[in-house]
Image 1 (cartoon, rainbow, N blue to C red):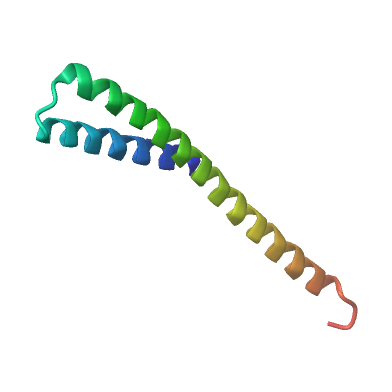
Image 2 (cartoon, rainbow, N blue to C red):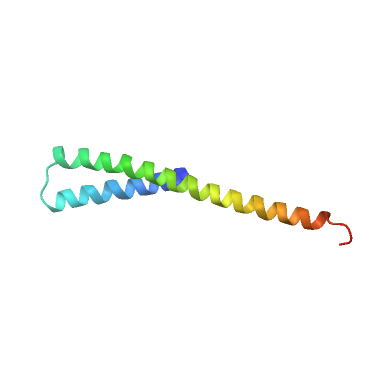
Length: 77
């Protein structure tokens, strides 16, 4: 999940930065370094957000599994 978020957010940031730079009349020597920097920044942010999301899902599944296993092991049920 974190790799997907990193790839998606990085690509979107790169594309938006390039489009914005060209829309205001910037040349490639100014636009591309900023686009690469935004790609890296948002890829890292996406990876962190995706990893947190994955962790939350794993914790939720593990807690639900423990609860269900505990409920089936109780005597008399």
